[in-house]
Length: 560
Image (cartoon, rainbow, N blue to C red; front, side, top):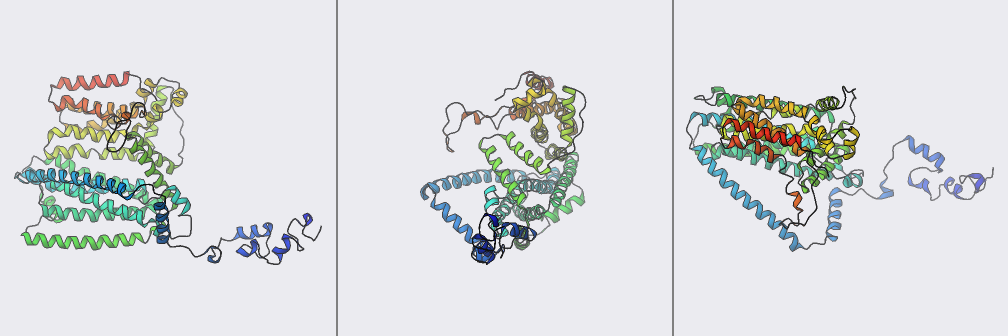
């Protein structure tokens, strides 16, 4: 073989040519830290054995996240095609709309607070003493589920590819998204506490203390979800805690529904409520001092929690961050199309992508029997939805305990709708896929009936469990028929139509077919509840909902 730099040396000889440069340590690939003797045949094996070491001499110093965000902001603003005045108009409209909504809602809450505070009966005091034990667990459970479903800290796919894969400090890059999560949790806690306590006649000092404590609780919940996001096992345990909190909220709701007619609440519950919401006796000065002390404690404890959790942001896995960003992008698309079913599909799709795979089981029967069996097995593969649906039984019992009997069927209908709709994923997939209908070998109308059997059984059990709060059999039947017909209509609805002329609106031109998307399903629910709401004879509570059910399952659903 030749020792010169020719083909005989394969480009790696000790003579002249590329091989000599590498052997002599000249300027070549060997200088950049991969090898001093250079060929791909030797260097590749050596580099594969050890980790890649970042040398600032080759690429320069690692930029700080602040400098990187400042540079990105400068580039984006340089490419912006909207003037400052146009952006100010949009901001002005948003601020004006929020101010009008806040003023209107504030006046309504204040009027209801004054009206509820004038009630001096024992049932009103019993109601106010029980509300915290229902509201707080529900808020924490809801916050855990929502934040864990989106991350809570998330990043777009572009951010995950271009930034999170670099040596730049990941924690500093994620702090803006983390701050947004904390702010949203604090605002939601304050609004929920103010509305929840003010509606039932609590004093404004008590409302302020409850709002501060609820803000601290939900901020701590947000910090806990960020901590749980770092390890999948922690996230699963956090979801189990959310399920347990639903059970905790259901206990006082049932007690409220069964004990609301008594003269006074149990002494132990009343004492605990005084401690939680600050209803101990005292003058105005005592209220003010206690409010200031509570605010200071909330600021200190909440600040410590937020700062401690912010130091652990660098431990968040990239996969979880990008998955949350994809979920938010899909939810934004569903919100633009006003399609509630698409929003539920986005959340369910992310869950099954995280699960990855499950053990398959052999089906039973054929045709309709086989489909019913597979739907039953599919529902059992995600049992947490059944737990959430059972936890929503707290809603009709809590409303029944408030004494507003006319609102119990409406509350039960919407709660049952929210509990049953996640079980309709199979029907939703079939109605949106013509090829899947052909593969199953049945008409779409028959498939809709078969796939509604398992959710229908759940609706039957749910309404029977809620029947003590509903009162009588006709109302229970109307609620059950409304829930089943509503969820079937929403799951089997065709995609939104973009045909026809656009309609002008303050948000821009909107296709008229989008306006019917948010109310699909809820229209049939309200139609079945009409005889109950208008106080018609019990016979109509059977006739009208039964007629709606018959029409729903006899008409073939439309496809795209």
